[in-house]
Length: 330
Image (cartoon, rainbow, N blue to C red; front, side, top):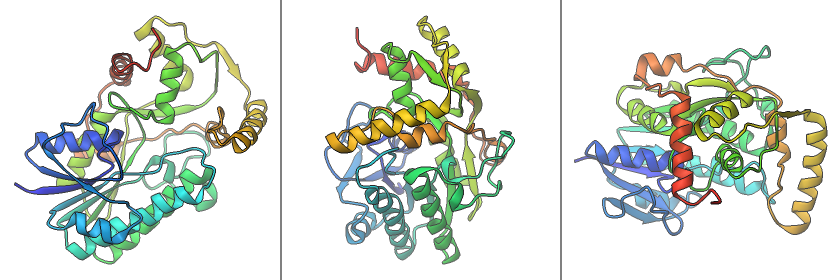
């Protein structure tokens, strides 16, 4: 029985990757810094190892004897009091995992990047893996860190690491316990805290399809290639319409202009720096919302057999999970 090393297994995407590996007969060894969230993960089958991605020796020791590596962990924050933490986790952490994989001679490594590290078309049409992109195009520290981490991954491929890169779009579904920024939008909607919205667009994909895409990348992905793991391109208004259909909660009708909200976000950030709390409106989130994050996953569908569960099902599964796990006020 082969062993897969998984970072981020206590998180959203990584948890689903770990579960699907176990279901397919893999042993799973997972890295964690602290206590593990157990609502979705079976406690016994996973071999948990204590360690920090920023510590190469810890990562190297934890990975010993593994045939495959899934580097899923990421510092997904749109604001941090010290942005250097985001770069340390996403760039240095990625370099450490891939260096350990190279030195151990693992059979294949799947690196989880993000569509946030890819280019966007100026006319708003869906982008793909080959759409031109520059560091200057990246909005905010999270996107910049993922862009730089993806460049690191490409360096390791050139050094001989058997590597496949996957770029998930916006995963939705059960197990988003943190929750992610997108998950917060859904939770706020369910709790009646979404009176208005910004005009933006996202590519929605079921998190279980994203996990399936990871395992398919291990088995069928071409070395050195990248694959967008996505599905439906929807405006935020369309997402709220689907949520209204699922929950019978009225969708917000007021669309806010970007510029006043951006000014308000700067004030929110100033208050956050004074109080040490996360801003209610992160400026990076507002800036990202200025452009539609539309993508096409044709390559992953044709080469990896990426499933295409409807966005309505992904949102319905997410709503059910948030309600069952007490994210919604009764």
